Length: 285
Image (cartoon, rainbow, N blue to C red):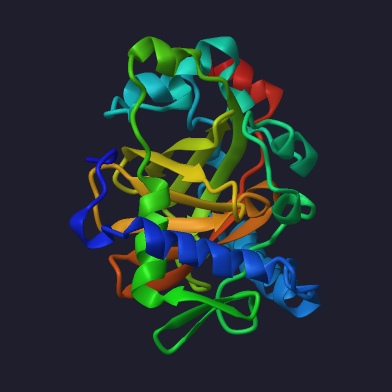
């Protein structure tokens, strides 16, 4: 199901093209790509609440290691960095990427007007992605209706599966890191943890782990080379799709816009978790 676009997201090519054209116009507006000090302070304050209130720190070193993978079998998407795990130790996937490394990672050519500077996508009032009535504005430019914006996110997140398991196994992956997923500012002790990686074609794969239920779910999506937008979907859920920016995923906290179908959205925050220590690595192998 994760490789099939749901019926509600049946966006046509012309609508998608027009959305991208309007979005690209935003890149000509100076100063919109990074939030001001106040907005950065807002997200940092939210993230600090998680860092100070998160009660799972002493368990995190046991997640996503060899023993954890063996104990949490779940259906992998066609594309998944787990196929490439044999090339690296498990803690490699906690690594923090740099923006320069990410931008030099992809095989596809990048539009210079889009990739000349990183974009920190910031959702909500005061940010650079704002809902006004039924319209969505990016960098002050109206790009889509609410429904079209959600449809385009799901369209981006739905990627074709690899032709063979050999193709999946040969894909190279760069870690984007591991994050606690906070659903609002009061959620300072999140139960959700997300690990992500991106391959050279801009396909994103990952695993969402629910600490409370001890369930793991595969995640898959893609980077939009025209906007730096990243959209991901989760397991068999055909309503839920989340989006952020690629640059966001190189930072300590990453604002995320979550679509629940075409009508409802919520703002979440990814808070980066520290890479487990060498001692944890040695004891958990």
